[in-house]
Image 1 (tube, rainbow, N blue to C red):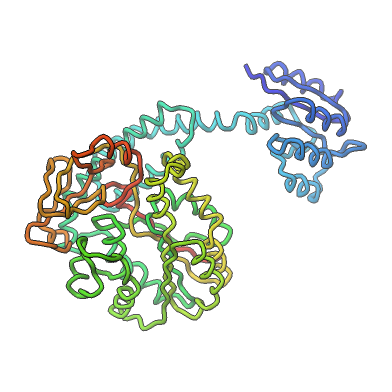
Image 2: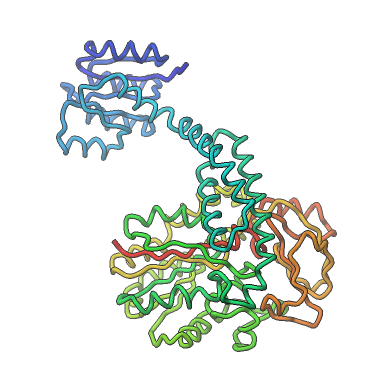
Length: 517
């Protein structure tokens, strides 16, 4: 039985006694007043869960009372009830952030529906979502038993992301745990799929899905040939598919999504490898061979992504694009503001590449800074902080200008990231790299069942630093730790977001083409 408190203000409140009795029989506690002044006083002096407010009361009108009530308690839901269907009254009420708008005469079921929507929506949505997922649980489990191809895995990941976002924050923790278990199983199956097919894709490109090194050739190049306006390619580093779906609604005001798909990040799913491959249109070992002055190996000092502009220029030339393009890498707020201020200059280029590094920095900051760990404690929070950044970033201002100038917008990334939970022991010498999701070295010691190993880097088109060097990749939500200081290391890195290994979250990443409205 419900115990919510309702305030109902109407100058003809006596005529509404049947409605009041109906609500009281349903368990609601209803306080009635017959003018706007009393409604304001009641809200000031008492607690109510919701207010029903007649618009056309003598003296203090419903609209005036609405404004005063919102000044007292901005969070209280107010339902406006009126005889009038005049558009300006509706607009004034909606502009004052009402929760619902009802036209007289109202019947008890209309009132009850409004109450359910405003007071019970979270619970009802949670129950409906749980029921819908229960119905689809078996279908998802059966799908995992099928032999899916690369495209089908992409669609399957989209479905899991949908449920991840639908189930986030819901009250049924048991159902959320069932989903986590199912997604773990899916990532195990996906890892087996990658281990079975990855090197074959690289040796036989005709059998491969779109990957980091083939994205520009197969997806961006045709857009450049067809577009009459400037094209803006925004690469948001470390952007998972669920993070893209979180920021996408903010773009609906300016763009329609012309196409959206997932492509496969190469291994390691790390900036050094995946983003260089994207801009070069080549696998890392090919970059090292063709552009030795533009590639740096793990054991070399210096930035590993310092030559993306040159690599992109070489790829565009190879693809037959004789065009003017710009490249901008944004790593801080001031750089973003500066690019926004000089936006008009970008319209002189056929292609503008913008690499935005915030999400990657968020991932690293979350590992290193306790306050960020608390702000982005889990995946829903990680998505939320991404959305908040995007809403207030210079990037959104730039994107608005892209729409104003009727240009094509591409949003993509180099790799995703995964929240790691399970430590896996690895032993390596002091020259072994520090990444928690992949290791490369000549004296690695590990349990082969716990990793995807590439003993000959050439099989994965990766550089061979020395004769005996090998690569290993973490699977699912594993992360590599050394036996020395094991507990300290696990406590520090467990439940942080990492990249470099094999998971749907890291490998299956978004490529979206948006057209200005």
